[in-house]
Structure formats: structure tokens, C-alpha cells
Length: 100
Image 1 (cartoon, rainbow, N blue to C red):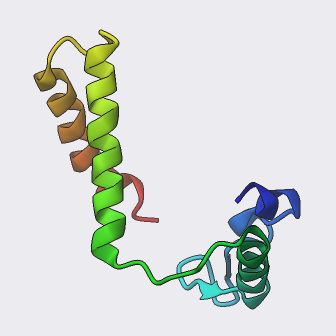
Image 2 (image 1 turned 60 degrees about the vertical axis):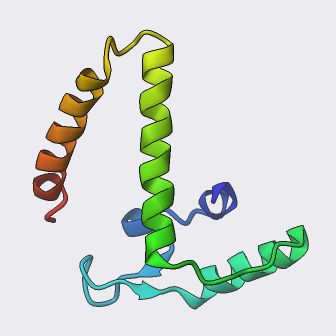
């Protein structure tokens, strides 16, 4: 990802993961970026694979859970219910924040 930024792929502000020829809400895969990623993967010896939507969701949720435990361990959050309150407001507000 840092490589893509180094070559000035900055998303809607320039070139990014996707092209937006029909406006910001209709992204198309940029074949140049896809080729760049495939070449980088080959160079690093990484096998590419399809990732199920469920796996992506699990990774995101598990990351949030781990961060919650870290907040408790470090004393930033006093108790699990403190984290629950934050998650509640995030779940409530995110759909409104990213409607476009």
C-alpha cells in the first residue's frame, strides 16, 4: 500500500485503487494498479488468493476485539462496558458519516 502511495495513487484526489470515470460513487478496478499489485506479490513470493467477504468481516471484528482488550490492559478503558458504549455510538454514527 505504501508503494501505491509513493507512486502518487491517492484515490479520489488522484489515481488510486479504482478509476472513477462515471463519478465517485461508481468505482472501476484500475488495471494498472492491479498489475502493480500482482507484480509486487510475485516479487515478494506471495501467493494471491480470493478472500471471502466473511473472512474480511472476521478480520475487522477480531481486530476491534483485540484493540478493546488492549484498552482494558493499558487502563485506558476502566471496564468492558466503556468499550461497549463506544462501539454503540460507532455503529450508530458510521452509516450516517459515510453516506456520501
